[in-house]
Image (cartoon, rainbow, N blue to C red; front, side, top):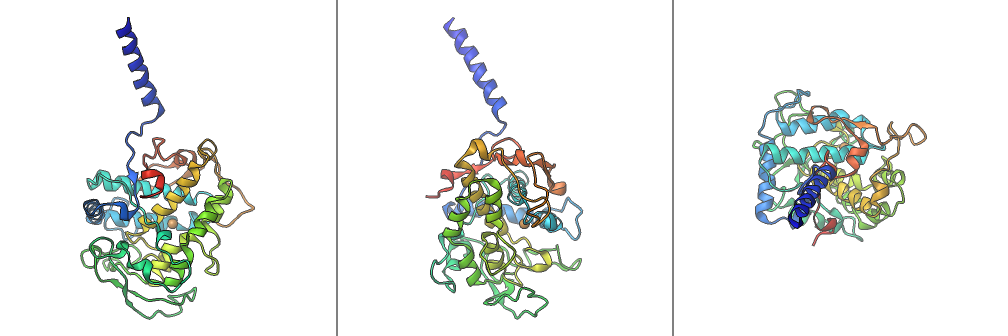
Length: 346
Ligand SMILES: [Cu+2]
């Protein structure tokens, strides 16, 4: 009697568990500096592996599977920024990249993020300290800046000042010719990864007070709008921090030909932090924030049609379309990851 009861209880538990979610043991994302040296090596090795696999999408100029992701982002760029689905499109894109690293390149860990607010100077916009952390270390991170290269007005349409680089990244794991980017360049002439640090943007756009302001928003629509702010360099927006603070004008992340930035391997750590900020905001009221979206379907059209829970995002051949509702829960089955120590770090 007792035994039979135990068995049926066990069956019920098993059943309940499998119905509740198909996401078991979600990879736990950490800040880059929380990874030990072996974990960092594994992650960088997996990115290099992705960049050695052949392209599968057939998108223009894509040669490697790493290019596939860059080409998908470039293709979709006109539809996925300053819209209600900005955060969820990028969440899906990033999770698909994480999945590719794990499934195609035997990576065992989670997608790391770069919490730039930890390093931004709160008083000195010209401080270079943010670039002197392990993120940009040649061995413990992703390598550093390119050599200073002048830019003309066509290349610098926003007339950004304070550029410090623009040439090929010279050290670390992503230098040419071992690592090159085919998308956005003439066929058969892949370019090196370039960086063009602009410290004033990096420090000004990454500060914790901006993140606090965004996370204090009471609903999805105001949160999403605060997250992107306006496409104007006179006002800080945290999305612009990594893009233009690292990519500047001639760098891969800031390159306006690949608007709003090509895909430096650091793109995924920068967007990882935006997703962590979004995830943390969701945790404050999960019952509501697992089921709430809004904001414009068309970029910057704040009085027009809003996205709804059944709105589908598309990342081309990288993964099937997904509804926004399915992307709100990072452990709901369509997605399966979470954040280590509630995204709070050590
Ligand atoms: Cu984007």
